[in-house]
Amino acid sequence: MFRTPILAAAFAVLGLSAAQAEYQESSFWQSDVDAGSLPPVAERVPDAPKVVDLKLRNRELGQQGGTLRTMVTRSKDVRQMVVYGYGRLVGFNERYELVADILKSFENEDDKKFTLHLRPGHKWSDGHPFTSEDFRYFWENVANNELLSPSGPVDFLRVEGELPKVSFPDELTVIYEWSKPNPQFLQMLAEARPPFIYRPAHYLKPYHADFTDEEELRERLYEARVRSWAALHNRQDNMYKFDNPDLPTLQPWMMATKDGKSRFLFVRNPYYHRVDTNGVQLPYVDVIEMQVVAPGLVAAKANAGEVDLQARGLDFKDAAILKKGEASGGYKTKLWGNGTASQIAIYPNLNYNDDGWREVMRDVRFRRALSLAINRKTINKGLYFGLAKPGGMTVLPVSPFFKEKNRDAWAIRDLEMANALLDEMGLDKRDKDGFRLLPDGRPAWMVIETAGERQEVENALQIITDNWAEIGVKLIMRPLERDILRNRVYAGETMASTWFGWDNGLPQPYTSPSYLAPWDQAFQSWPKWGQYHQNHGAVGEPPDLPAAIELNDLAHQWTKAYSSVDRGLIWQKMVDIHADNVFAIGIVNGAPQPVVVSNSLRNVPEKAIWAWSPGAHFGVHRPDEFFFAE
Image (cartoon, rainbow, N blue to C red):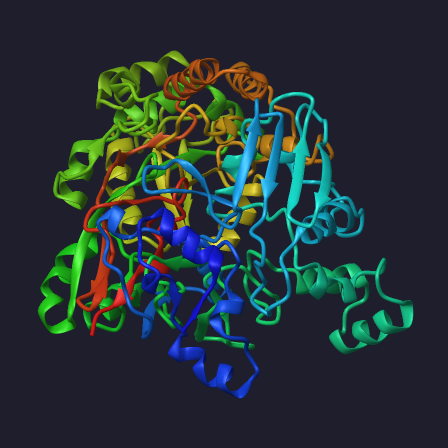
């Protein structure tokens, strides 16, 4: 065991003894240390590590070791290790406050100037120093390189078109500065899918034309069988995809499987920056084993005790069978809250390529009528045993912007009003089967495409099929593979689709409202408006509905606002506009999320929120602090 003065000083601040300030070498890496191929732990952790006080948060001090088993349904979902690992420059703590994590500290001057301080002695997973050079390389050689980033730096780094002034005073300091506020800067760094504003420069420079001679690059291109150095660089630079085991990382676990198909292993990062108050380097768990299984098998395999931690791929409908398997499977089923704005949402595509249907769906009366016809109480009782909350898509009660009025807006079943709205908009003629006719004479057959991954969605749509038939609209369900569905939506080929509601149903004034504005093609009701914003008008269509234009203007106002009060008022307006315009039809929210946890796994919260944003699913609950008890 080893001791450093800085660590001892850090522990002294916490009132701990000198003995507790000793680092403990991991048995996982002991043989490498003994062989001299890896430095001892005292030389691997930063000079000023992140010391986590588990007792302060009512958690147990753990021990290193063990293999944690979990499952995903696609091999590309190895990226969940970046989500769950949640190594971020700044991240949300358990109270959803932004705190330094990878960074030693940061300073925020009026949301205009952000000074980032790195940890002295912090290293990448391959042992190379992590310094401001990694930020400089990203900014100058990646973000502002036309071949690597054709659209230039990502949107959150632009304030009304203005890019930041970025400087690097020394190897441990990075400064981002704008002339106007950029209130979303820190929050974006803490996201489930963070915009990495740094890169392992030492690893990527050999693939970059500015740092490697042409002959060397030509050899690498030949070996990799790609045509350009930019394509090769982008292939190697997969910080979020996490599919390149050679790419150094700062996450708690690093990939150890090359060319995997159905089983991937991730081993502890020997240079990870967090330690507990006993001087034990995190993560506690040595190895994560991620198995790829068919979507329909996740619950069955969890029930058979084949996982140690699982939530992804499990729905509330699985809770009953999971509870039954607890005794034989050696696990417990926890029910966490759900942070999405709606468990199921229907997205009419206002950018649908069919002009006739596009005009109908853009009429707010049509969307309101569809919502009014849905029997949410039946869906809640039949699919969620009455434990969810029926309502339209809006923020959840824990957000300061929640209004019961918005949850109920156009969401309390009223067939008389629904029929009246459709008659009023001129859809008063019907065919021989009782279905309404569009102005061009076609029957009102609405095709809703799904990702085909959640049985509860298809069960809900079966109920809604009968509900809509009562107002003369025929629902036709079409299951597709997720990526195919997404591409069809983006291309305007999908009439309507289903997905979860907003990922973040828990917004605060500091949360960027960009996902409420027509700024992202991922919002399935306006993909082409989102493309127009994301590509600065090069592709897509500009928003041309008054309510969408107002959302666009309000989101711009939020980025310019100087106070949290002003930002909060803007947020509330945007939430109210969505509730009244029913851009997406929410069904229920707050359905519990089953979380399967091995009986031997400790520090997993009994009650928590399962949310993509904010929180990165397991990430905000810090899986690097979970451990196996003997």
